[in-house]
Figure 1 (spheres, rainbow, N blue to C red):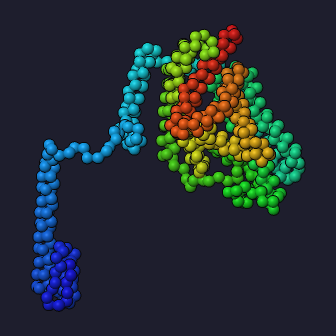
Figure 2 (cartoon, rainbow, N blue to C red):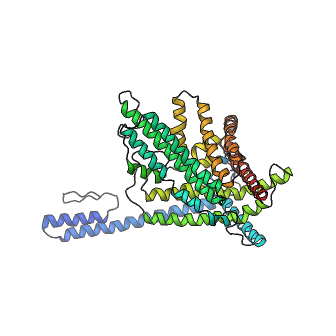
Figure 3 (cartoon, helix red, strand yellow):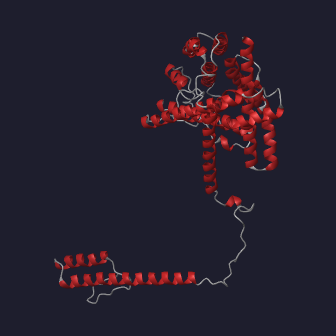
Length: 496
């Protein structure tokens, strides 16, 4: 819209707007002090023209819609229906270009329906089986020595702190400090083992104590090793030994009791003087995660009592008896065992560690990565348990490489340490030492090589991921569960 200052006003063919009419009124009031009749008439004319333009535009839209409708109905029987080359949506050339969200939803619906039927069938067949039973037997009432042992574990971090104070003030030498730390860590792991073996405790009570013990041991090793490394950096600042990605302030040697206390309760196994911190605690977020933790823990207990226990009790030793029957039991056990394992992972690594991190304002919450997409066994072990993975890399793998140990042997040493602690956490509470857990973890080493070869041969991430799920969850875990269950039952029978 263009309005000139000449007596003859030129109006562009574009539709005038209300803003332009208001501008004419303001110009008239500025020139004449008030709205003149001519100005009002011109503004009113513009508004009328605006309405006429709208009517014309609406009329054109109606005509276009009518033409479009006629064109659609003009599709005749003789018109060609096939105009270009196209693939079927599920063909090999087009299947990965299509969205399969509907099929994914169908799988979810089928999964819920099938599992709901199985739950109803199980309740009708066995009834309500949830009880303390195998996990909390009568011996749990006599497990107070295990509770006292668990409460006394903080003595060992305190002893490690005293050693660091002594070596900081040069009351003892570096070699003496190393020997004292070795004595402290060894005692910290042997003390609970002796208590569990001497007390005929329930399996779950022993497992919980051994898990706490292993966590304390890993933290003590990290505390001693990190302080040793910081002393070395502090004593040789001109040798350029500062690790990449860290500043001198991050590696300044300081023995701080508050830092040790925070480290012992923080959801990490790697000691450092300071950690990334969040500004506040989200109490509503904590409450929601606590509710989820209770729900999923109850669901996990339901699966154990209603499904796993009946299957295991009606099974045979997997290395004895009929082979086909043993395979059938392993496959039948694989699905509920997988559910329990997924619930255990979600409850501990996602819910509990995040709750603990939120309460402590711990900022780095990468407790796991997308291990479910792992293409090889090696990739799975790097992704599923980040606190342990970071500890292994920091305190075993790279120290081995710095000391000239080949990469393959360094990986083997890391698996050896992992196998020892898996065996301690399972064999000690079960009071049997058949080394099934140790063998299972060490068997991962050839599996790493096999899956790496297969993924290189097939060049397909889906094949590698399926191999990982089959080896690890469908065969390995149910097999170990049956082995330990029957060995525990045989031990109890022989003890009578």
